[in-house]
Length: 124
Length: 154
Image (cartoon, each protein chain N blue to C red):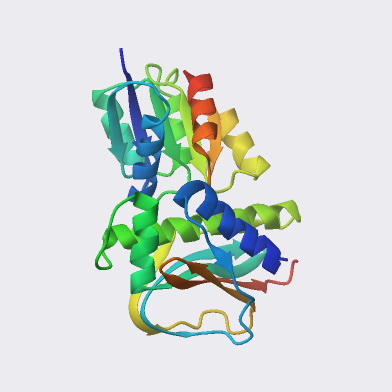
């Protein structure tokens, strides 16, 4: 059975790159759904619970931190693994903050396909 | 604060890992360019211990080519996808610079990227230290710019 993935990122470029990279991992996917910000992502989660969420941190409207806070306070969704994507991969305070909120990992941009695959495998 | 080598390495890393295209750096400009014609500029603001910006400036053809490499597609004109790809490039560069400044114990935040397209003059921080490096890709040259102005705490 294939995996269902939710990508939350305001950049269409990044959503396309992540989708392309995921398809190179060798996994099968039933669905890869895209959301343009945290609110769209939360709206989608009301309808469908994915196997894994990839979420950007720096977004307008509901950003990645707020998205993660709302997810971690929801009894039915808090067990869904979330990989946070950030341009601030080397910033310890950002990594610590998302880890404290229960993120399954942090993917710093720019990233390689191998790094995404490694985090993907660990989270699932 | 941010050296020529750091900016070159950050740009090359993005092209190596995310765009899968070769890029080479030229020596930094001695005189800042502020007038742009038929150009796409993506800009990320910096705040905190420094005010400043990270900018990527590419002529329309080069912007389309970079976006095409990024997205494995072809663009004949500057559209929202081209602008978004240039924004993502500036965003990743700003993240790299923020990480670098954080490692130097500075506190810096970065903004959401914005984009300008057309003919324009861009003077944002006239008193700032600046670094502007031309890079060469197959389709031509583009510029990467950093401006940093301390707020007195650095």
